[in-house]
Structure formats: structure tokens, C-alpha cells
Image 1 (cartoon, rainbow, N blue to C red):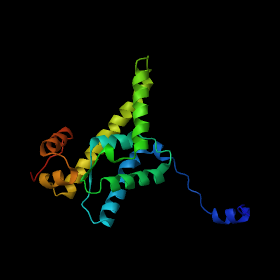
Image 2 (cartoon, rainbow, N blue to C red):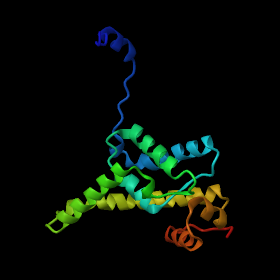
Image 3 (cartoon, helix red, strand yellow):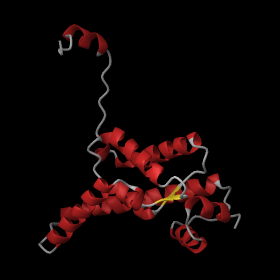
Image 4 (cartoon, helix red, strand yellow):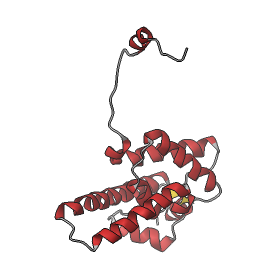
Length: 178
């Protein structure tokens, strides 16, 4: 008892698909998150939620050692905490994720006093590019889903009108219906 039959394993292992871990596919985070949040919003019959830039930053900078399953569970926990709020903020994330990232940030600050080789800047540049692209994609999708209505986009995203206009200007997104 307690042993898996080897012949059964070989019968089940018809096709093996190897995928890299989520930490190596950060470009997939946005689509996975949007899909999962949209599904949760539909299931609970509530309006689509927005994401603060800080929330997106935390999501992008975490390593996700539990891969997609941990990512989805984290999004579901944040959804439960932010249920009535229109926008996700880092405060909605589980404490263990916020604490781990805070420790990482403190460690980076401590190390930054030492000579840091130029190659150490590339992860930061990659993250900044990821954040810029994610922000642009989010704004484009937000405005498309709202029919370019700034009022509706502000309601869904939780952003102030002036902040939304600043972000749209930053990403050179034109609004036809003000």
C-alpha cells in the first residue's frame, strides 16, 4: 500500500508538456490575472475590478514559488479581501507576500550601498519595462471596455479623473469620449 504502480504511470504519461515556471514567464502574469479576476467578477456578479500600479508592481516582483496555483489562490484571496472595493491594492494581498517583498526591498537597499555591477540593473530595467507595458495594456483594455468613457473608467479602476488623464497622457492614449 502507498506505492504507485509503475505500469499505470506509463499508461497515464501519454503526453508530457513541459512549461517553464511562472517566475520565468512574467509576461503571462497580466493575462492570467485579468482572466482570473474577470471570471471571479462574473461568478460573483460584480463589476470588473481595477488594479493600482502598486498592486501590479507587487504581483510582477514576486517569484511565485507555488507557480500558477499559488498565483490564482493569491488573486482569489485578494478578491475576497477587496470584495466591495473597485480596485486592488497591495493591502489586499496576503501578509506573507507583502512581508517577503518588504524583506527583499530592505535587503536590496542594504546591498545598494556596495558596488553593484552594471548587470544588476538589467532586472530592474526589465521590470520597469514590464510595468510600463502592463500599465499601457491595462489602460487600453480599460478604455476599450468602457467605450472610452472616462467617467466609467474612473468608476471601474478607482482612479481619480486627473490621475487617469495623467496615465493616459503618459502612455499617449487618446480618449474620444471624454
